[in-house]
View (cartoon, rainbow, N blue to C red):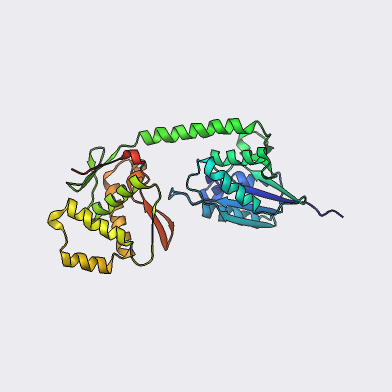
Length: 321
């Protein structure tokens, strides 16, 4: 006797899935269950660089709702590590690797709900289905207010061009948005940081912290991980160098330097100075959406935070003379 097929739903978690967490209606994933049923559900979430969006919490909310409402037997949550959620060249191999880690067989029927996630993520679902790299059906859910069927299948060969156009439109919108951001000018000699003619309210030590992350941004887009009791020794060395270059009259003595190198800088002191620097930045920059690009952004888990600037490299000018 042939075993009964097992229906399994896969989906990225998107901002619209927050639903009642944000006082709204059910998002794209929960809408699927109005017309479809599944035995298992796999939710993929990625860490966001936007501090206002927590995809892990949204995934937990959707998982709890599915379980509470008895919509599926088991719900699994998976962190999807991705640095650029707009780059399908990065997303696709990781997504395919994840799918192939699942059990494949005639008794397993996989379906991907592609309405949640970035356009690049939607592209990857379609590429996977069209290539046959992984056997999967594609569906899209629609909000009831639009008067369309709640759940529709995606016809292969027709969905990709439209989503690619949407992806290009989103990239252009992001580019246009970044063009409007004024440049950050750091004057090493004067120890000042300016944005659009406005001097950021930074103390000498805060300026040195800020310059460190501006210099780092020009070298790498990756944020710096600060964990443990002390910050990395390279941070201390750069701090001493920046203080000497910008504030020679306030430079620490050789004895103090030795003590600082020996003792290091505690993570608690580091976090406090970052917080003060960010407060000084937000106090003078009236455009709050722009201010988020200029602050020292903080991401990650409690005991292993990542720090860096979201500002595009092209917007950072460091005057050294």
